[in-house]
Length: 397
Image (tube, rainbow, N blue to C red; front, top):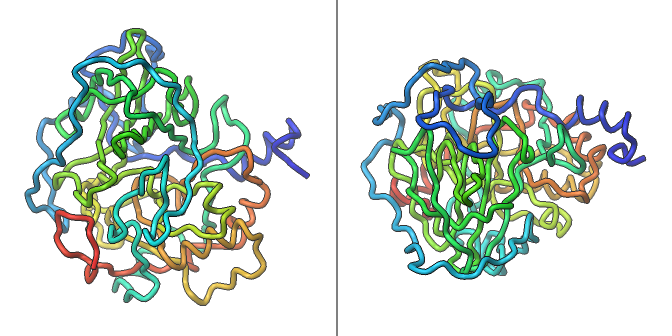
């Protein structure tokens, strides 16, 4: 039975299976420096923080005592057009197809980072991190891995993190950052007015907006994004990632993700899962992290120095001994990727929540079988320090 097509069952299934028990939490809630002028509800506030401080003021400088804090130079961004070209219709949640020999996917003809990028690097033969079992126990050894994506709607919005592709002629529009402008790549960005928003237009959650400029092979990520009546956007933070580059964010900088990583490369996409091969690392969340980050992450989102908590950027993999033969072909593909490429800890949120793209072709009941049969104890943390070429580069060796 397709539960998502039966209203009452859909509600109950999504409530207990697909929908997070707690919103992703990564940053203290901040009082915006400017009141949005358009579609943002006047009472809306971010829901990501476990310890909100609504009257706090953003700081212009962040102190990072993390594992990697070398100085780096911000990535050179593509030049903004001098003339506004005609707008083109974006394509929401496009098909991602594997690139032969690249080790990663292609979106709109653009490889998602070079073949030697750490996102596209196998880790099935790497040694364990010495704190592996401690991290697993802290996150939740008996907690099931949760597919935080699926078909249908929840609270009027799609389940998962959508993205959109635009051509190189897409007009660039101003971006106003209301919280983390000091750690954001300045606008303008080529964000169309109808870009899909995580959680839907009325969401008060993370409201991620991901845009791939296929003409320049550049990824634009926004966190807590709100379209304005004049065509501009307001956002909590933003980051630009040239997909042809291995450059990382400046040390200590956030992105649209708490770890300072790009979001799109870590999403589970239906077309890849259906093809039988996901050749890149995935993205997941945990309830509590340490005030530290490890390569290739660039930012932490915690005040705790508890050594039992994992740092941002910690990579985990599904144990090689875990038997996946009883799962559906789609789930087997996801689980194979978790064995081979693993997943990066990218944000604070619910335990073992695996991020993906919403798609009506997902079978929510099938995805739920991973949650009931794959648990934290089936994962292990790995030490990927041996792959690092330069702490300021995502290139791997």
